[in-house]
Length: 107
Image: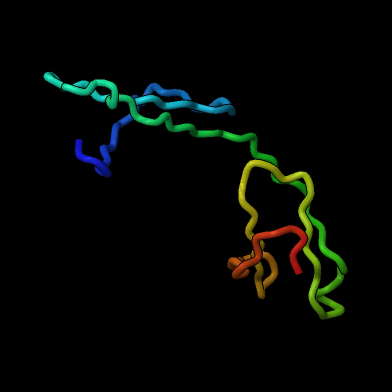
């Protein structure tokens, strides 16, 4: 392959990546008549599968729907994922992402 080119490789359907941890993938090339086999190894690619934890969400003040104003939203104990706060103008349905609301605490 030429410099900067890529090749997608299909993984076996029996590959079990369910357990958490770090999975390392190594690749190399093998070409008949290769005059420089020292450059056949490619950098290893690592995939980390983390344990996911939802965490606990709180709002302050808790009655902001009644009192008005802007609440502070906080999540504690979350791990292994990305945070995206959402909002709804109805009671419990039709949630949409709040643009830029990806941190805790968020106000």
